[in-house]
Length: 462
Image (cartoon, rainbow, N blue to C red; front, side, top):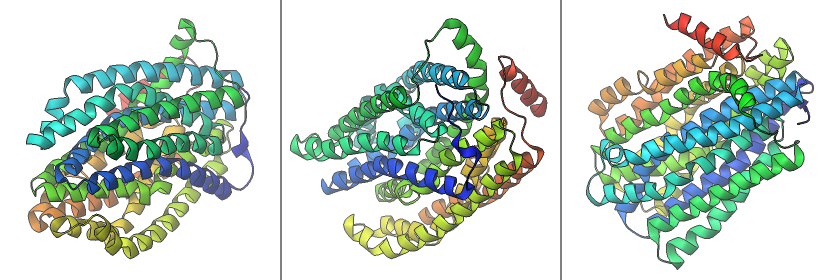
């Protein structure tokens, strides 16, 4: 694998902007297909199908977080190796990260499968909605290890600064999904099953495209060996372990919010499901920003360029602010067309109006968490990101939702969730800023680096 550390020079704001926007196009292709799924399912006129996707989405978020955690680890390690001008190390860690991701992804998917009925029940689904949610998930779960190959492969491409081809990989899956959705949902009258099958096929396309692109343009993969796997796994899981735990916090918090919203009926859950599909479409740039800023910080940290690390973090926050204001204004203008498109009324309409108004501005603080976590992960302190994420989705969610739901009902669920994000966004910014000021810990540099970092974490916890 050729060392390609393109972020060590040039305008950092330009790097942040190009990486974020390129990554966004790819993510938007995927998110838009999820959004279109909701449109097609809504056209069937069956509220239980929309609610089923809402419940299933919370579990898919949970399983997808495992893949994101592995991608964070692989991207950080490959970027650091490239910053150190060590192409062979970058290739080795990319190879073994993919193997570990696929294997552990299969185990994780199997565990979720075995507990699927209980998980859906825990979210508050009952009757036909419960059965439909389980059916949808039973189709989707077996493809999780394949999706992991695509997600980790995309992280490898971004670590090389190849956001354009990473974008093409996701677009290819999005196009396949968009074509198959109406064919299977309406043409073959498969309804919810059709939406699930088209998503599975799209995941296979994404994985195949990512692996082919790495092989074709970035030197491919090394020959895996037990010795190499044993050497690289400590470094991978030093970051992946805390990163996966950090990512799992989000679906745990979202599951609680879904459960709280279920108390207000299927219309409230359907309204929240629409918001859940609309959010990544609207804020796709901010979702992409974490993966965009991470490699920039990682390469410069690997090369010992502390000033560029600090500036990259600041530029990431500035970019987040500009995007949040622009998107919030756009959402406000779209409130009425959205409610007309989905024929929303009552509490569902109230929730969408609330989100596409004042609450969307508070998304800046979620963006602050994303950028701060990227800094922590790429500076060798992933456990800090874990603490911030779990704090945000436990202490920053549960008590806020309880208080505001008691006070304001269903709208209070969304308000409480958003205000908790403000508190932990600020906290995450303080943590990341102090870490950057200290220069991080240099990151894993050898086979024992993982054990040393875990020992430091143990000391911090005790």
